[in-house]
Every structure is written in C-alpha cells, then in structure tokens.
Image (tube, rainbow, N blue to C red; front, side, top):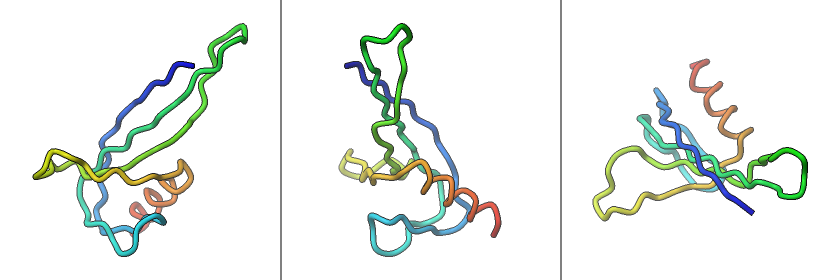
Amino acid sequence: MDIRTSMEIIEFRRPFAVRCRAGYLPAGQYVVELHEERFDGLSFPPWRRSGMTIASAEAPHDGQRDKLPLTHGELADLLNADADQ
C-alpha cells in the first residue's frame, strides 16, 4: 500500500483550541499535513485520508515540530470559526 503526504500552510488570526490538547494555540502560521493511503486491486488508484496533523510553521528550537492529530472536520470548523471572528 502506497502512502502520500501533502502539506499546506494556513494562518489563524486568533488563538484556537484543538481537541487533543488542553488550552489554546497562538495565532500564526501552521503546517497542515494530510496523509493518504492508496488501495490496490481496483481498476483505478483510489486514495483515502488516513490522518492529518497540524504543527506550528515556526522553526522549532530543537528541530522537532510538535505535530498534533486533527480531523478534516475539525480543521474546517477551526477555519470557519477563525473567519467568523
């Protein structure tokens, strides 16, 4: 099974909270990684989401980004809430 990852940089104008972490993350730019798996054995190569993470776009001091798991629905809710404020 093949796996592919795509990345996008998004920006939040206000602090926001994700379900997997207590408290708020600061406003700023974040890297969202979408991981997908390909299914074999079909006449076309279908891909399905297998995971998504979000991490600060700032360069970390230790070289390791704190990647937090996220769902597509949660990201959409966060972006909508940020746009509404």
